[in-house]
Image (cartoon, rainbow, N blue to C red; front, side, top):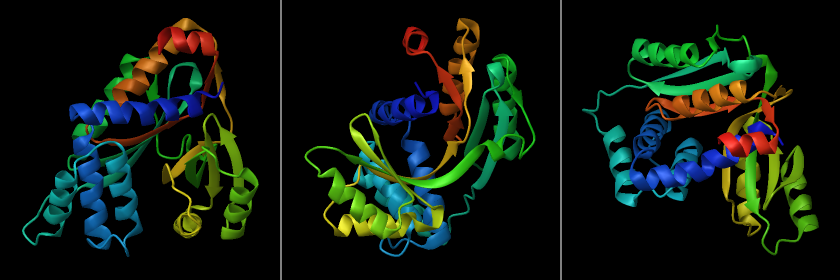
Length: 249
């Protein structure tokens, strides 16, 4: 079982649950604000904003919250600036971890992230220490439903996709980062409803976690990082026996 894929699936489900509680609302709003500041408030011309809004809606963020975030970022008097920062480190068992954050206080965020690693048998490293283990790519997910796989595959490849695979109840379409917008728009024009589309980091190798101690600390570390207000995305490269995973997750 791929820990990375399993963790990604759990994160999507967890985001919906947390959003219902309001836990994730600030994160979605923050990404919407940054995307608006960088590319303007028009969803038709700002692909990053459109992606952020779609993810927020999928997780249950109310339309009023989305509207307020865009309006706040568009306001001339808005002085709230967020910095995009990437952290890299090693978790228990040598698992590689990459963290993408949006923060208005670099020292606070770095201190918090470092403490999570230290408390869970990990080590926060320098930028670049594990980044080479991951490939940045666009990923589009489409629920299988009654979709003709051959037709979807042909449409995706003709649009510029680099890979096509199946994951549980979804089709996964991979693209070069710069081609994600083009491929996703072509699929939508062809009538396909996208479950999600985003730029992500896919691990190129994996670390097997065999002991309960390493597994316990690793899952606790990842959960702590995920729950930090400033953290937007977390990527890791662990593999774990499904029985061990279910016991601890």
